[in-house]
Image (cartoon, rainbow, N blue to C red; front, side, top):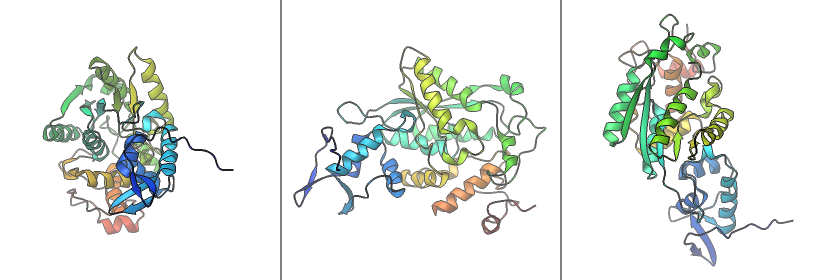
Length: 327
C-alpha cells in the first residue's frame, strides 16, 4: 500500500519539465536543512532517490524531495550543518568551531564559512607535542579573515599523561590507525574538555552552536569521536545554560577521503594544514595521522600536496603494505 507523503513544506520555486514539478539540488538541500555535500553523500550510499540530471543540474520530483526532507527530519541535530527554520529556509548560525589546523577541521571551517554562517575558530594549546598545528591554524584564519582565539591549557598538561601527545616519555606510534598501538595517542577526555571551553565562549557571545570535525575514521581509536558521544554532548550542551546551544558535527559518519573530496570542491589549501603528531618541521609520513592523511588523499583520487620527510616510505610501499609501516 502506498503511503501518502506530506508535501506541504515544499516552499521553493519548482522547475516544470513535461508537466512534472522538480526541485534542484540546492533547493532540496536548503529545504532539508543539510548541505549539498550531505545530499551527494546520501545519494552515493543509496540513501535517497538518484533524481535526474538536466542541463548539468540534479533534479528531484516533489515526492522525492519530500522523502529527502523526511530523512533529514530524522537526523540527530549534531549531523546538521545548517538547521532549517519553520518555513523551510536555511538558518544562518553563529558558530564556534573547535579548530586544530588539520585537514578535517579546515574543511569544516571552509564549509561553514561557505554556507554563510558567522564563524569563529577556537584552538587549544594543551602542551601537545605537535604544537606546530597552532601556527597553521592561526595562518588559515588570518587568510580567511575569521576571528581566532588560542586557549592556553598548558597548566593541565601534567594531568593528561599516559599518551604520546602530551608525554615526551612515550614515543609516537607509527602505522595505520587500525593498529592497537594508536591508542597511545588518546589524550584523556580531550574533546569533552575542548567542547566545554568552546561552549563557554559560544554562550558568552550569543552563538547558536559549537562544531567540530569528528569523522567515521576516528571511531576505532577515539571514543570521543563516536556518534554516541556527539549525541550525548549535544544533549548536555542544551542543558548547560538557559540559552540553547547545539553541537554540530556533520562529518560524524563520513570517511576522511570523503572529507578530502569536499575540501577539494571548497578550494581548501591542504598544503597549509598540519596533521603530523611528531611535531617536526615536515610531516613525518609515518605516524598514524600522517598515514591516515596519505591514505585519504589516495582514496579520494586527489594529489596530496603535503611535503613529507625523506624518511617517509613511498606511497607505493604504503599501498602494498595495506597502509602499515614496514619495520
